[in-house]
Image 1 (spheres, rainbow, N blue to C red):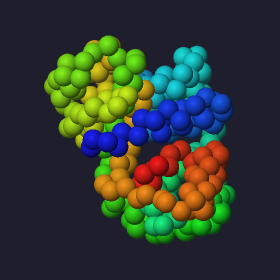
Image 2: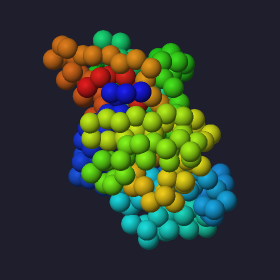
Image 3: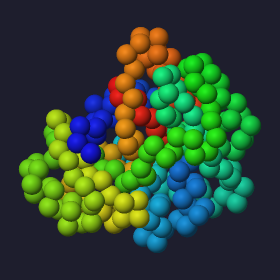
Length: 242
């Protein structure tokens, strides 16, 4: 796993999101609504909700906003029903892209996603066309500036907690888990007082694609920006080695 934690990327995304907190709060708000609908409003009995709450706190969402979202989802029988959809496709130079969306209007979302791919000189493919190039894993990123532990101590805690892999990057530590073990490992690290810059189940590329052509880079950035601006899009995974 070494060399590709992409923490600089994550920090860049967080800075962009900090400039538009409404977007990330909308994303998490929908995830809270879906988690409550599927498993109830008590995070102690709903591990999915507990993970979303941890994600919300990592993105500096205020506690009262989180609690309001949970209460609204639990008490509103007329709440919007979101449907989860995944799109797969190709960007410039064959880069692989996966888009996860939560939507109340499939046609709108499909149109927006296709438009983003088209403007980025890519195309949407069939389900399964690129997902085999990724591994679904729990990924926890720890900023070295926020963590006082040394690498060996942190690694032992992570592995003892059930993590699959641990790696040290230039400015961060990366902990990888199996998806089913993610919640348990994250909770154990939280109880140990370890600050997490990012903690979620994600899609990690098996190989990376470099873009050397300036036009390809512009198109890829255009594609990703359009997806990022769409409120229906929850997450975008790609194998571009930026």
